[in-house]
Length: 348
Ligand SMILES: Cc1ncc(COP(=O)(O)O)c(C=O)c1O
Image (tube, protein in one colour):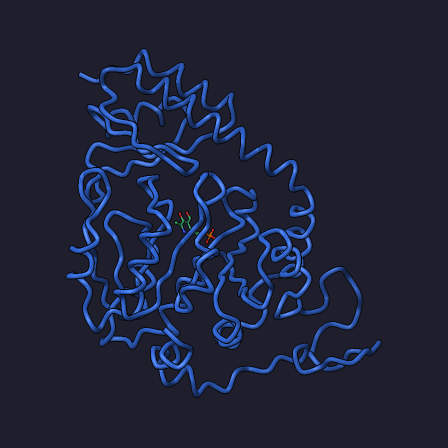
């Protein structure tokens, strides 16, 4: 798809948008006295608005990922970018998005809020699918396809080759949500940005990087699209404090890597011990920091964990996840506590 074709997918009101011009983005020269933004002039750490384009944080992230920062949009969590994508491309009451089922719930919530139809493509019992069935499923009204990779809540991944093949058959924007990519050995779809111009890759600082409380999501896309998204997003969507603390945390890559390695090791440890019990029917393969576990009486096991001070996610009501709990990998001590509870669970 070329840029003209991509532009034809953007809603006309967005293409015509005259963006809000914030005081700080209009002003480029050096100055000492700021009487332009109606701030309180008495200095404390936060009396000034943050930079709307977050250049320092973006440079830090771009260096870390090895992709130029003009491809990057930052959101108040990747949830904000999911919402922006739907608002940029999908006409309410007319267009649709495609999501896999089961998958991350916010694609549907954001589409519902924006009055955009959601068409769900069901995965099979191993959470896989046949590409030719997917191609047959696509409709002209589908503007965005969300591929969560690794998938939440199932933990499995699809190959970049498959994403490339799908991109040749889908007529809209392809979003690959890589919230859990740092726990996977498989390569990131960022590597496909030059081959698939209609691709948007979502990542987040909430998972492996350990900054869920700061709310910083990353959207990688063509620079022209990134510049459009920067005009659609609220100007001050990342606070000064979040920007400063994220830069600091990303200077500790060795610590982050060691935490991620521990989590991956603990994922195997948890899986191995869970499988010791007859009432655990299946622990699905996971490239993420959680395990989806099918068991004899998921509601009862869920309650049993709660009674013992451990909260996991009961996913039993989600399509394909009957009798399944999703267990996030914790610290070694936390995981050991969970494992120590397993022998005394009354599953009958
Ligand atoms: C697949 C997926 N995408 C996005 C998010 C949201 O991430 P953020 O904290 O950046 O909004 C989550 C959070 O659980 C997720 O599982």
